[in-house]
Image 1 (cartoon, rainbow, N blue to C red):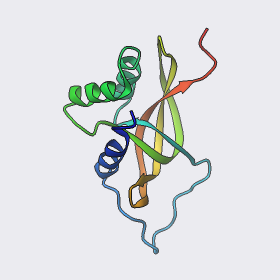
Image 2 (cartoon, helix red, strand yellow; image 1 turned 180 degrees about the vertical axis):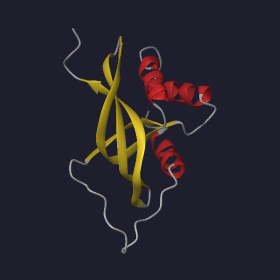
Image 3 (cartoon, one colour; image 1 turned 90 degrees about the vertical axis):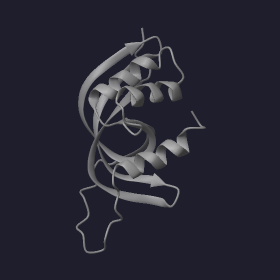
Amino acid sequence: MTRIGPIAAVLFVSALGLAAARADEQPADTTGVQVGKGVVCDTEQQAQRFASLIAEHEPGDALSTVNKEADNPLACGLATVAFKPGKHVGDVHNDKGLFKIMEIKIFAAATPDGWRTVDGATQFAAIPVEGLDI
């Protein structure tokens, strides 16, 4: 996964159409913002498909499959983002464990040139749930 990480993050950030924050803009409400690195997708279904595929595939191969099926090389990607968790929209349980599918609002993303702000872009993430696999 390391080999695709930097490339996917750069492509993902570009796909969001990021613009640097201007000094005269009002800052977004950052209460409850978290920072994390992981796979984020455009749709709930893509995040669910990724979580399903990683039971039998390497994460990079799972990403490639989802993006190919979506006919969009940027549908899902690995990124480091500042986000607010939103609705819990589903679960995927497989041989690797339980994954919560969450809607997230992204406010900033890490790029090779530093953090870039995003105006609350809605994405979806498959978040592994530790310690609940019985």
